[in-house]
Amino acid sequence: MKPFLALVVATALLGCAPKQDAESRQRFTPCSPIAGMEDRDLPADARRAILEAQEDVCAVLAGSRPVHARSVAPPKVKQFLGQHYVGRGYRLVVVQDTFEVGGAYFATYGPIVYFDSHGRNPGVGQISQVRVVTLPPVR
Image 1 (cartoon, rainbow, N blue to C red):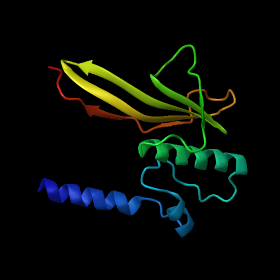
Image 2: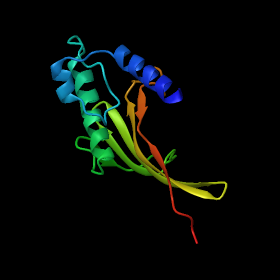
Image 3: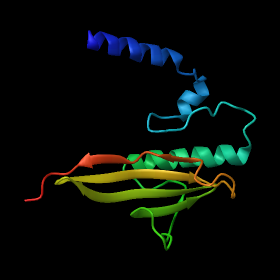
Image 4: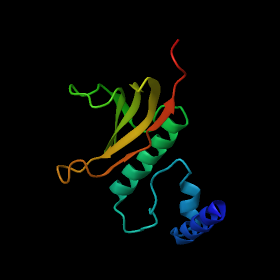
């Protein structure tokens, strides 16, 4: 019964997903956390920043360096361990860290994008695709 219920819920959720036009489907990949770029009234600078950030996120998740953002020195007060980059309209941090919980070890890896808010709503306008994986026990 549980597998059937899960199938019904998944089908309902997929049916509620917004439809994208053919151009959007070609531009977006499964690695992208960004959707809704069909709005033709979106300012060019905003569209460029979002699309370039999206391409950088996909590159990082594929194990490559960001395509658009350039490497910069980390801030003096580091929030995350990893590489820091600046793109046009956004900052990118590629998190690489390890931690221990209850004797088990984990690694974190992935991008966090902070879109420039120009002082408005700090902390809003960020996306993350950081993943956590278990590490083998240390002997």
